[in-house]
Image 1 (cartoon, helix red, strand yellow):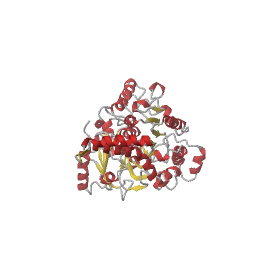
Image 2: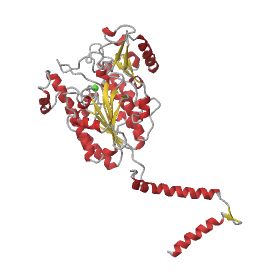
Image 3: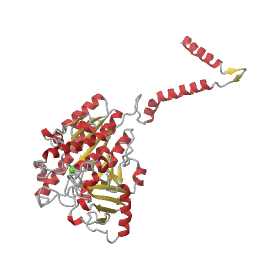
Length: 482
Ligand SMILES: [Ca+2]
């Protein structure tokens, strides 16, 4: 003991000898800096321990692991069709619970009211006119899909998928932080690996029925085994994970389990509506199973959960299809969705009256993972309250289901829209819209605060406001190119 103490004292006195000269202390800058560096390094070593004592939650001896990320994407559900959004008949207890644990944006939007462009927007953070996948399919050949033009049609389908190879996607970007990513459910862009997913269900092989998800579409409807198996794997590997849960729910076929259909059969006067309502509850049940699994595995605290719908749906009373002003339309029935973000201890629970968009999901996830958005991403980090408050207006665009020219988004454009405060302006592209709206300069203006279902077009009475919003819309994207 003594010897060791002496050794230390001796070496210190020798080190200090150079500092004291002629009875005066001369600061040897290099040595002082070395001392400071030693103190700093000691502090860095001790920080996790002190952090633990102070309850800061910094893990001992390790860099904070980025959060796991779970994206829950509903398919064809109106923004109104949840208990927590005010629906009187549909029961969604699990998503209601998620809402009580999340930052909720009731005024959430997707730019396009159709599956494929909407989903690519979520995984890239880009508007469809940026990522160029604007429709579900290429131009329909003369004589239909099975006609003489079939070969070209199928070739163009593959050509459309090439666009996903050209853009950064969430799974590709998250790889930089060691994430494993899993795809399940809707996915139109070929094999899941084309999107950068390390794991997944969709093979995308057109010879085996690959189009919009194939095997992946079993998720939710036939349990969550693929996802839970993947989570086990990621835990074993000690890697953060990203989950794309985009089940074919409540999407058609509306074939809910009998026990759920029986709950709604007598509550509405249309069997088609009853079936759709039961589908919404079935989807909700699967969300409960997924979130419950995170709880069971002790992962909830370290997992960022984001909720969104790819597009709206208003059920027709007469058939298993959608009513007007819903899916594929320029109206809120197709474009609006609640957006929720949950991250226990990191996200303030409550409601924001600001706008949220599906283009914001990628920037929000990247920020949480300690990564930057790309220059092309125009969305904001939804957890940055200053950015949410500072955003004055949102924009979107609706395209034809079958593209006119798969390489030119403008060729397939039907509508562009902008919402500022409660005013929503919709500008039609006369080339590609229904005859009713097919006049040069046709526009619609709605006051969403007084008229949430867009029934009174105020464009003629408020020409100045139309002009003002039109200018902002054109500045965002003029719809003429590419
Ligand atoms: Ca959809």
